[in-house]
Image (cartoon, rainbow, N blue to C red; front, side, top):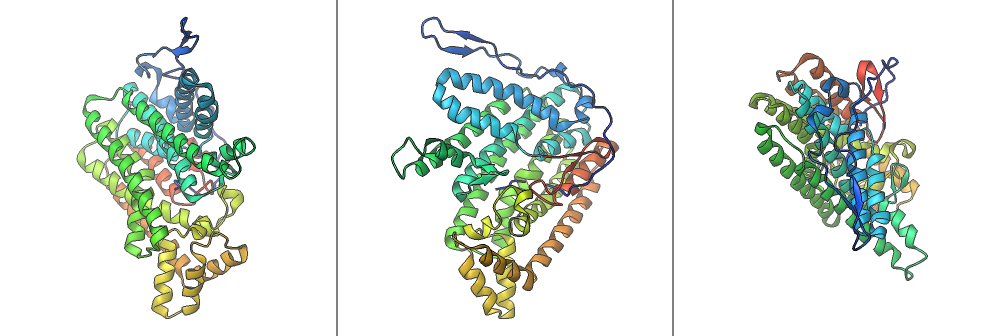
Amino acid sequence: MSPTQAKEHHGAAPPPVPRLPAVPGSPARTHPDESTGQVHADRTEPPCPAEGWDPRQVDADVPAAVGRVLDGVLTERVARAHAVDEEFATDLAVRVAAFTRAGGKRTRSQLLWWSLRACGGDDRASAAAALRIGAALELLQTCALVHDDVMDGALLRRGRPALHADLRARYAGSVPSGRAGRFGDAAGILAGDLALAWADDLVAETALPGPAVRPVRRLWSDMRTEMVAGQYLDVRGQVTSAQALPRALHTACLKSALYSVARPLGLGASLAGADEPTVRALDAAGRCVGMAFQLRDDLDDVFGDPARTGKIAGADIREGKPTYLTALARARAAAAGDDRALDVLERSLGDTALSEAGLERVREVLDATGARAVAETKIGRLVEQGLRHFDGASLAPEAGRRLRALLRHAAGGSHGSARAPGPAGRESGR
């Protein structure tokens, strides 16, 4: 999955960033149990005091503010994991926390924040809730990526060993021969489950403005189901070789467009108490831009530089993923009676041992059939269509401008090929 990611653009030097307040929901106090010797964490209530966050200070650096909330939450969760079992905490909890802390540009939580601000959310209680749900989105992203890497058999993530591959290597010399791989996969699934549990806990523990409780909980629930549905259709497509264009687009919508863009926008708008026309306009914009985001990710998988994407080139091709790009190439080759192109695609898609030369032949087919050019054109049209929906919403001018720029950048290039706009033209990277 992947999730996630815009073109690098260097702006002017950033202005001084105001000092952010202390982390709301800071690590819980701990105390020893005299009968067992175990360490237990006291719950700190409320977990995120509303008075801790001034929205204008957060505006200066949203990823940093979300990161500070994550630091507090993850420190507490890891401490509680150590109280449960040291090996579990060291192997899984610590790795999940490290993976989440190191995660990307925090695009989803930025979209949520600027949607809140563009829809008029300017009080501290809404700001505190938005940052905590933004942090929960980052944990949900950890779950999605860790599980995705296990299902795809991916060995790299963000230029480093994938979490399950790291655990496999950790125990390779201490488990029976041939079982390290199975252990790594099982542990990776559990690590993703842990991240999901922490994300759900964080949302459940967050104080929400009264009118926002129902829509936020419904959006969170829908988003989790959509993610699973999209991932299932993706996996099913690999084993059934389903390549129909409408199905590929539907899978991309469920797997990425809603979760990566539309739902974060909806969460922010709901927290701000936006009216129904504004919510609908942002949802339509998010669906279009989210689709462009996923199509860009598909292109980057085949044509992107691994040094930039942090993943091995051609992973989707070797796994036989039913992407819009390959479905389009098949359809165009069939319509043109290009048997050679169809043969290359048939032999290459799903070939886990596909060589670099074989991948280059696939690239040639994607170019020769026009699939690459059509996908690029579709990305541009989706972005422009999304922005037309966006421009129909009634939003606060400055925050709306920031959100519009973030949406445009989101589909410009993935995996760090671009950076989302920061304050005063500054670019905030991975």
